[in-house]
Amino acid sequence: MDTLGIWSSGRFFYACFEDSVVVFRGTDIGYIMFFNLVCEDIIVFKHRKDADGEYISTRFECSFEDGKLTHIERVKQEEKFTYKQYEEEIYTGEVVEVIEFDKPVMMDDSRFGLETRDLESSRILLTIQKRLQLIPEEYRALL
Image (cartoon, rainbow, N blue to C red):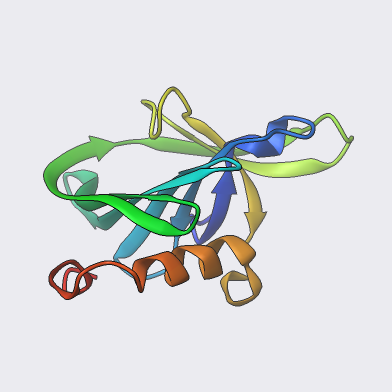
């Protein structure tokens, strides 16, 4: 199994009003996003793998309310992580791919179900890309 795709903690719940997602794009840049009806928090990270393990290096965090940038902060933090992937039957009876990290990624979420591997048609990735157009150029240079 591979990590490419959009992974959602909301995949396990019926009609949730907020969600945390992890996006692995197949490049070294990825996103962690928490969103609800009012706000979106996006963490941009760099992912790397070496002989010693896998790492997520946070580049910056930004927050939006009603589509407007409300906060942005450069963060230098690197964490080693491990994960496992498996399949699980969810409440709909559908079997989904699951990625489970050894520690919480956003708030207390460490388990995410695969939403899609088709990043080009993803509403979530489109939203992230639109929001990142609103950030100052000095932060976009980190992408």
